[in-house]
Length: 147
Image (tube, rainbow, N blue to C red; front, side):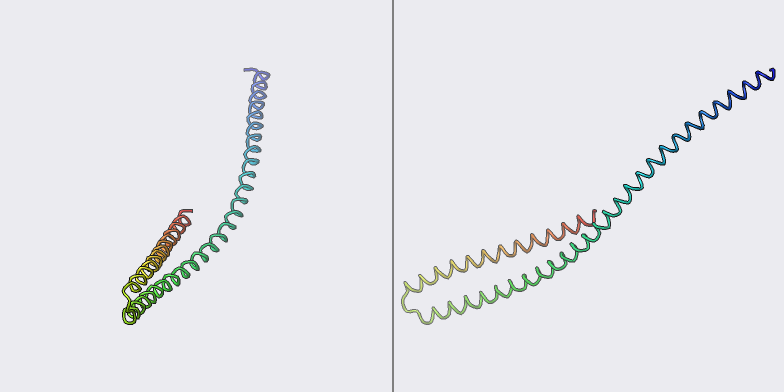
């Protein structure tokens, strides 16, 4: 191989290398741009996550508060049931002792039964709402855990 051919060969190789290097440099620039965009997106996600964590903590505190309030309502419902039973017993005893007219007694018993049905219905609804609230709390806790 002559010197000129050798020099041409070297120049061709260098040109080829330079093109490959330019291509690599261009691809590196593109990668850096994409990486910068990724970092910005990651930063936005982190900020959103911080906000979500704060909201989650607030919801968790509120759920605990609702749970405590629910327990208080359940106790109050139980007390109302006991008081209703006591009132029912007192009313029955009083009317049985003082009533002399069987029609009046029948009328009063019918009214009392309607009231008791209404109270039973109300108590049943409160219990059902209490159970639904407990299920909602459990579901929210599961959802939060799954997030």
